Length: 246
Length: 333
Image 1: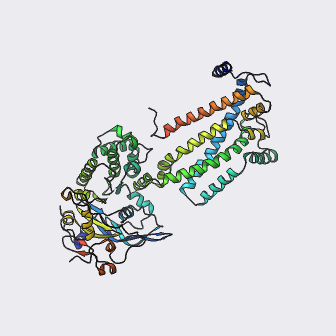
Image 2: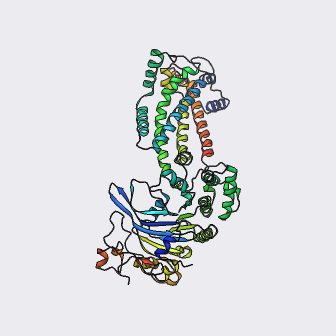
Image 3: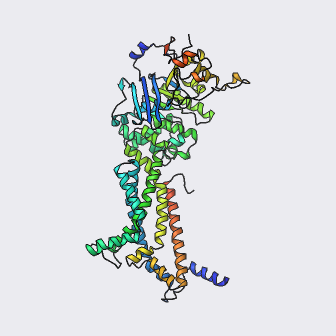
């Protein structure tokens, strides 16, 4: 038993997760084959959500209770309430079937990734928007903002140079964690858009009781997740001068 | 330097800042808070005026009003004027006030650790003002910033310029903040309890620095404090504020040696002092009234040991007791 386990760990270090029981291929090959798609989907999704969430969150915080704030709140409530698979199906119906702007299924080009990353990104954007708004509101109430105004800086400088820089720290942490989750594969979205990503790979592995593949998948996802968190920590120390690696 | 000027002289005497009958209230859901009830203050160039009072007495509203940083609403300017070099500040467009802030009227705050931006370098926080107000290039601004770090006693240190606030000690932070405030050569400096958050040894150094600034740049300085001990060290003139009204004002020496108002004497008795060693420290009973319900008559009467019937009925007028010594109290003769 113990020897078996040690042997398995040793193999893991050499990126050898054994052979898949159903396809007979190397688990590592199967994973690496699917990973690029999941990676690009996750990165696109998180980029999209950041592009939506941060500007809208900042505007909401700066002009509290304005039209933009209500729009932002409406968006984030809707984004959190709408299940991403339903959004995905709607997008497919509208843009792939009715207007044929994007392909219905398949993979291989950026066009195949746009709709899935929108469906994935909207829900993440909703969360990030709330967070950005809350964080920005908090920073704007800090004392250094009074100083910045007392220095005669323009409101733009006060908001975007002084407050935003501090407000982004928690947002980046959460965005990083979300990226980590998305790299584990998005089972439902991959299913809706028939994308061969990690999520579906692991789902079928579970269906078929393909233990080596499941084990390999779990280890791989855990590794990726910790790596992303590590990367976020590094980024954090660049942005936050109080945390400097010495 | 005792400043002996009567009220007719002070108008012709080119006051840097003249606050006349300033009356400000805050309209809130739970009632109107009457923060300033008609205060008069004048500051001339090269003079340190100390504004003394307990927390909640209206010191901060006064300084924020001068800076044009009191948001209206919730605040409302009921009456009075703020003349800076003879020009009215109240009601100026935001864009104009912004150009005055930091440039002609600058401010130093109480807790440098909180009032400096934690994620911008000290140099950046100084140079951004020079670039904005004086239109300097970033190289010029950096040289100028170094020069001002030297003025405040930090030396021409590039290390400080490139440091983040948390990398500096409390005293250094306050010096950096002062450098930031004076870098555009303001003619009026508002120092809001600049030494309160510092160790006693550092307090003295910062006070010396502020006194030097007054001399070197002939700035007018509004020094806000609740600490009469500190005020005695630094001020040329002192004004004591209570519940949004100036109750007594005089030249430093006059105020401390010939105290008129019972509130001022009560404040003086509450300072720990080597001469009074062994005696009980006398705190003033009660609290500063809420600005939402200020007592009728003299606002100090509920806490005043000498109060009479008249004090609870009529608001005392401010009277001139000679040599620029003003007080508002019924019982002084």
